[in-house]
Structures are given as C-alpha cells and as structure tokens.
Image (tube, rainbow, N blue to C red):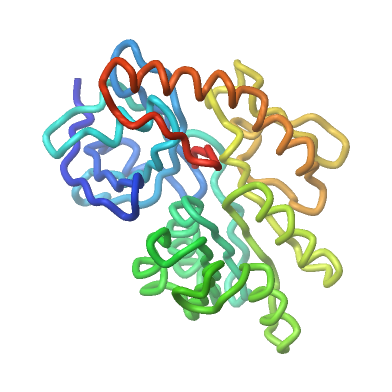
Length: 290
C-alpha cells in the first residue's frame, strides 16, 4: 500500500503533524499545493496541505485538525501505520513575487500549516518575509517555531493575550502598515472570517492580497463542485483553479454560507462514529480542513 507514516507529533489539542513517505510528491510538490488522502479503503477523500517536503528523505509533512470522522481516524494513526492512498501534488502553486519584495504572510489556526511552505518558498526566492500568526490561545498556536526560524520577522497574536500581542492578526497587520513598513503583497490563510477581514484591512492601502481558500475543498479534483467560489463575479473552483485567489475580489460571505451547508450531516456522522467506538462526540466550532 505504501504511504508509511514515519513520524507523528502533537502540535495542539486534536491537531497532529504526520511525516509520510511519498517520494514523488516530495520531489514535485510546491508551496500552496495539497494532497488528497483516504485513511482506509472505505473512507472519504479529504484534502490536506503539503506543509513541508524533504526531498532527500522522500517524505512530506501534513497537519490534521480533528474536526470530523475522517480526521479523527487519521489522527489515531501512529508511526509505522500506512495511509491507504494519497494523491498529489494537486492545485496551483503559490504565485511567488520576484526577489526584493516584502511579503506579509498572515496565518490563523490550522492555516499556519500553509504559511510554513509559503514562507520557505518566499525566502528561497529572495523576498523579505514577515509572518503574522494568530490563535485563540497559546495552547492552540502551531508551527510558530518552524515559521519563525525562516521568516525575517515573526509577530504572534492571541485572542486572550496568553502569548504574543493580545488581539487579532488584522490589528497587528494594520499596525505594521501604519508604522511605515513597506508591504508589497499579503498572503493570508486561516478561518474564512479571518481572511475576509485581512483583505478588508489591506484593500484601502491598495496592497495586493492573495487568500488561500483551502477550507472549502472536498474532493480536490473539481468533480464534486463543493469548492465553487465567486471571484470578481465569476464562478471559480478552488481545488483546480486555486486554492489562492485575489482576496479583494472574493465573495467571502457566499463562502461562509457554503461552509455551513453540511454541518448537521457532519455532526450526525461524527456522533454515529463516536457511538460505535465509544469516543467523545464533541465537534469543534470551526470545522475546516486545510
């Protein structure tokens, strides 16, 4: 079957990092791209970002937050276990600006798994990179050390002030811009509501802003149509035409409505699975796969 898990690490409660053998993807993958996996032969297909690649070892790193039945099954795996099938790299790579540009990467929650490869690619291209990472609490902040080791500057915010600056990433971004920092481009990934307000923050300044719409993908091939999004008045498909789009032209309100379509069915599926295995059936408030 292949796709053996070689390392597992807990990043935060119900959030796990997996290093998986996948030589082809490790060689060909680029920042912004993702994979589709099935945990077992009767499982559903889910998309996860390629958070890191090690070409020499032939491994990729993925991060999964437990938000439903499939991610619960995935997060129960251990080193030596194998993922049933794994396809990629999929999606378009991040559009990396030319050297000498200053780019701010704004991540929130599980979205930091996307920021990690973006910061890596930007630095390799010769850009100055500032990373702004947000979480509700220090306990939920992930990958800040990995990202901070690469970025030229790291700013951390928490809603409750338990780590870094108290407040939202948007406040830190506005403070940075108003403080005179030259910002040529912003890339944002995280909860849709966060991305919406990051784009609203940069729009008055005319700063180009890319939004990674990974949270709305399901099948990852464009066949299911679940990832439809309106950009500049036109219907686009996040999995095959994205996942990154012009944030100033994206209809985030429509996006948030689409994300809520199947919450009842998702909760029912998870509760049924929990009854069978005796696990806790609680569902996190924000169920997004990145």
